[in-house]
Length: 151
Image (cartoon, rainbow, N blue to C red; front, side):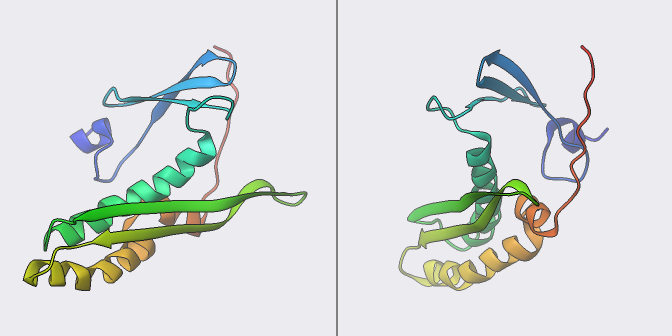
């Protein structure tokens, strides 16, 4: 395995997280690097799985946009809002619709800021259409296999 495969870095390869139940409706996720996050069913202030999906959309594209624009100038403000509507239908079950990620970035005056402002819209399109693994996976769709195993 390469270090990217082991650590979940930016390269190609296998990714994995492990979830452990803490109590009814609360769970801890751990990544290959040892990072943890607690999620819940919405009865506490923990993020829900749907909120993590929105966070993954915002986070993945933010990394792309930040790396592209920051080469030109450090942003003075960087806020990204990811939102959508939870829906349900007999044909499709529970799912999200109307997913939208809105970037609100501000750059300083001057040549570097002008270059970052010029690259900004293109960087959002590049992230949506090619770079962001999360949004690309949602857009193209991919089967999800689930199995049940005794411990």
